[in-house]
Image (tube, helix red, strand yellow):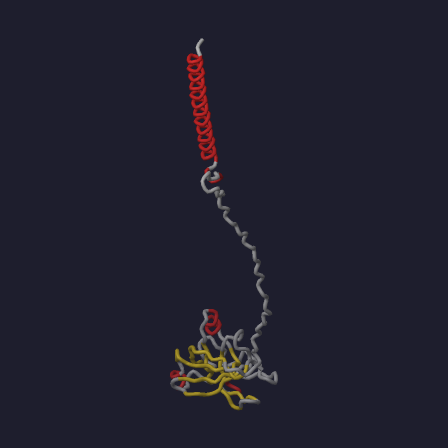
Length: 221
């Protein structure tokens, strides 16, 4: 074999080896890139927020929402002392009532004709309309008129100042009662009956009024 043929053969072998190397290297690089792409796709599909960028190497992590647990604050009401209010029926406070007033005599229909009263006098004695009259001499308020009322609200000896549209203003003491007065109070109304010695007294007809004011000056004896 001549030297020229040998040189040509060696040159052809080198060219083949170089081409083969380039092809193998190209296939290897292409395959590597394909594998990296597949790996990147798999990572993205699993959790896109956990991917690491191959360009700026900034890690993307999922945002964690801060959950603040609300404190359960128990508010305990402050107990305040409740002052017990007791009605003072023995005072001379100005309890004012507006209601009805009528008049009656000892000889009224259904009455005993003597005028016995439901209450005893302050000294325990018995007072009658025919024997003692329709006034009562009170140790504190002097000579006052006698009225009948509901004794559960206005006990015996209660002093009221009566303001009557016709009879004017005067003091009276509760010494008697009646069914009409009790029923009126049960219905939330005030009704007092002014005592007269007899039904023949002409003033008795001027007594009826639905707008009489009673101001309590004393509750009972």
